[in-house]
Image 1 (cartoon, rainbow, N blue to C red):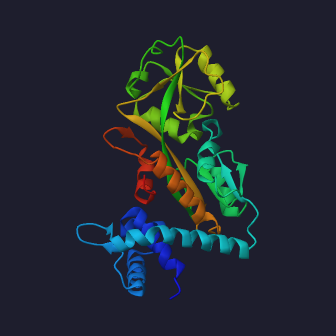
Image 2: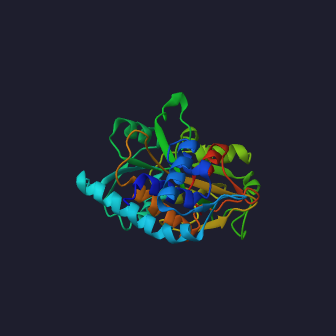
Image 3: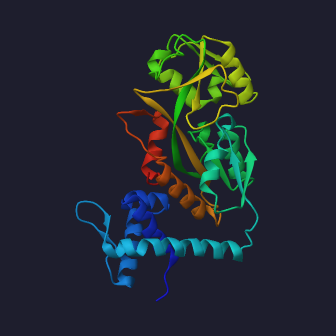
Length: 317
């Protein structure tokens, strides 16, 4: 019997999500069609791969099948890439450069070795490049664009990263071991661009009623930290795992009750799935599972409302 890789892919995604609806959404198909693929694979193998009583879980046969199924998909991706001569780099436009997006990409593509990052000013410019075909993939924080300018694009949430508050060592709150977002209401949010262009910072300021706001040009992380260091009344937000270029004279303080999370996503054009896209997505899934990139507790964490729908189709933590 020859395995149909479309059926194998349906199994692997279902094994990751343990939910037929979410698996179907990730594969851009209907739940009915997806269920039929799983049933067809089980019929061909003459074993049940999933138990369906009170939820979805792998059977013993499913657990045995999963590692080999993943290997088969990876081999299929490599074969397709070789046949189509896709040895050229996968073009990934990244944005949110102050927050060092490539450190996350690097942890997911170690085995790929064919990624060519490209600069994007922001998500709108990256979306336009994807729709024109000037980029294969995009990586950064994705949010709804006005006027339907993101129509025809698909995305996958791959990481939720806590953010710290960064203040000068002379800031009145610099001695705190941790802070609540509400503690910052008497401080000034420093935004390294017009706040209307920085969706996450704007939504954070609105949610936690940060009335004092100041913006300036985005001249890189060095300029950002110099400004914060020199102004004891201001603060900015920075990903907890991103290295500051010069932390001297600064304090990075964890935010709690709630902890804001920055959502990193991979995006692509729905009508153009690069042959290595699934390999890259599996790289993010594996890295995310090991590093708990998708941990989210609504009682503990804060996500902007526009990021909540991404949770339904995210890979497993």
